Amino acid sequence: MSHREPTTAETVDYMADDRPIAEGPIGPGCSKRDPIVVADNVTRRFGGITAVDVEHLEIPRHKITALIGPNGAGKTTLFNLLTGFDTPNSGSWQFEGTNLSGMSSYKVARLGMVRTFQLTKVMGKLTVMENMRLGASEQPGEKLRNALFRGVWGQREKDITAQAEGLLAKFRLDTKRDDYAASLSGGQRKLLEMARALMVNPALVMLDEPMAGVNPALSQSLLDHVKNLKAEGMTVLFVEHDMHVVRHIADWVVVMAEGKIVAEGPPAAVMKDQAVIDAYLGAHHDVDLGSKQGIEELEADLAADEESVVGTADAGILSRGEGEDEAETLTPRPPQHDDSRPHGSHLRKDDSE
Ligand code: ATP
Image (tube, rainbow, N blue to C red; front, side, top):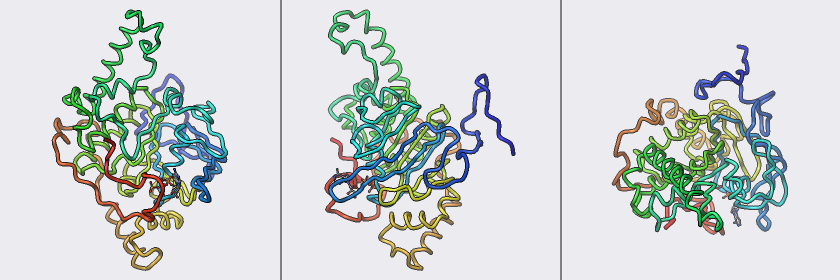
């Protein structure tokens, strides 16, 4: 089948776009037809540990890319580096052709590259609306010289409020508008964090374990929201341990292990890769790695995966009231590799307050 680039006058249905993602052979660090992020030689060491050692990585534009790998593979650290929340020992990367190395997280977000956190960072003592307003860029009233002139910032204030109200309605949080964020369930806080990230009209949304700690009912709608980001023309990069989720919503999968990219490709193909099987079993390290039983369990999981349905056909058409006032149940997680890790990224429960 021949693939034709659309002309600028044509609009692309991003959900149906089946043009190839890679340009040339598929493998770790492969070139993409249309990358939104290009990273080179990014390394981050913590003492004797090399947490990230990425030679080359390209994130495809308008696609949903899953970043997977065992605990401690360096996924969160890579997120932190790319979005300016941490500083690498070496490396450079571009977003939409702009060099982001050394740029603060605030500026990175303003350029349209936003991220959410494993443990949500919504402000519990602020209302839902106040949290949303904090997500907006360009608030002229913040500048002292403008603050005196209501005309300068009054209209922008109204626009920000209207945008926040639109997003809250979309994420079914409008009835919580004036509630303290602390009163939301863990899943609702994830939704709020995602909604807040969209206040800058981003081109790339990076989600660190969006489904962790979310009850099953709400995770369906979260998945729909992720798919909708793509439908609306955004690029998504997300970290996820649940292979069912990955298989059903990702267009492309990048696999990290011990800081390096060890495989990448379309989900169905990449999950048969031996490096991925190792990584997958590594993430479920309660299974005896490499044992016959372990492989059988993985095969059973993948077979069940073929039949499971994740997300709904009505992506974005969510029933009113879902997730509201539900008791939050935590998704069971495998035990962790190393409880003595010096940072909190392994904590699964939302405890941001
Ligand atoms: P998980 O899936 O468990 O969240 P991950 O793939 O996101 O894991 P990272 O959290 O990025 O992995 O950790 C990569 C390595 O870097 C681990 O060995 C971790 O212990 C180490 N590390 C991460 N952050 C720090 C830090 N601030 N100080 C010291 N070591 C760190």
